[in-house]
Each structure stands twice: as C-alpha cells, then as structure tokens.
Length: 174
Image (cartoon, rainbow, N blue to C red; front, side, top):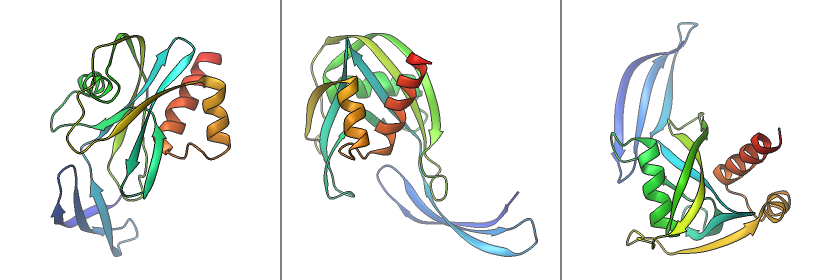
C-alpha cells in the first residue's frame, strides 16, 4: 500500500481538479503520483425496444464528434441514480419507467479517481431535452447488432460506451 506524504492541488477546474502527491512506496522509496481528482460519473444504456439510444457530440479533448451512451458528471454529493435520471432527460429528452444498476468501474485508474456508475434505462418516453449551454447533442437510435458492428469497426471508440454496451449485452445473453 502506498502512503501519501504530501498532496498539492495544482488546478481546480469546473468538474475536477489536478493534484500531485508525494507518496511512500511499500519498499520505503518515495515517488510522485499525478492524479485527476474526479467526483465520479454516470453512464446510461438506454434501451428503446430493440434499439439503443445514443448521443453524438463534439468532444473537445478528442478533437472530434463521438457517438456515445448518455452520461454525465456527478455534482458534489449527488446520488448516482439521481444523476443518471437527470442526465438521460437532459441529453436525450427521455424519461425511463424502469431502471437497473449495471456495473461500476474505474475508467483510467492509472491517473484518475473517476468511477463511472452504469445504469440500464428501459420503458422510455419523450419528455423533452434540457441541454446545458455548452452542449450540442444529436440523439440517434441504433440496433444492437449495428452498435456492436460500430464498436468492432472502431466507429464507436468511447470507452464508457463500449463498456456499457458490452456489459449490457453480456448480462442479457449470459
């Protein structure tokens, strides 16, 4: 187990902060760990009959549009389920009558504390989108086989989408 000797926040951003920690390793040596300190997030596998509801949006860090499952960052102290309900409505304009927890996992534990909580939303109905002012999203519906093909052909390259979709399909068929 590594022991934190000193922790310094280098920058506090809108959704997360960057810190550098000096740590003592199990062998007694010291090293530095740079960490993205993240409050966590949710991602939703939204199932509409035989289709998945996906969102297409430009991702600045990736420098391109990505096709993804709906997702969002937790507000401080926010319950992940409540965040998932909010994000589904904001990004897709849908509400769900049935929710279930799928999995939760670290997406980049080598440098980030972010844990994503995955949910399945079913029994969808349209209630209207309420995008944040910096969001521009197009909602798309694709069949399961088509989505798997897009993953295999590297058209869908977002890790949370791949994780959520394949976990859902494994659970559903396994």
